[in-house]
Length: 124
Image 1 (cartoon, helix red, strand yellow):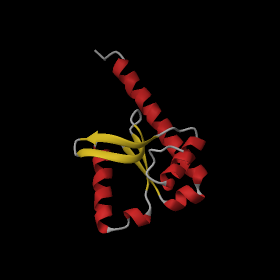
Image 2 (tube, helix red, strand yellow):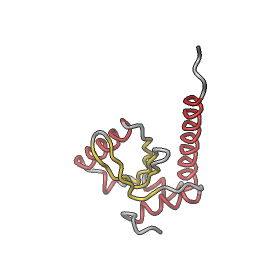
Image 3 (cartoon, one colour):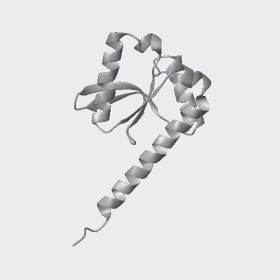
């Protein structure tokens, strides 16, 4: 449990990630070109977010518009946004955790390859 979580649904998502060996920060604030946004869970190091999207909270027109803006601004700034439904978190926890772990592993590999490319000698 972490007191920063906005609700038990987010805590369930975080628990699924932790079960898979992934530690994400709750209520991470991210500054983008389009504004500053708070995501449910995130890793600034790997630029990955995990969102707990319930129909009750995200189901209206205004909420949908707000979410689309936030997600698109994050993607524009090279963040990977993962969205999970209540059913995912409650009934498919292993899949949720593994998916987040796989995306983080891919991000680690991408960072490593980018670092190697920057340090490689340039061609004549």
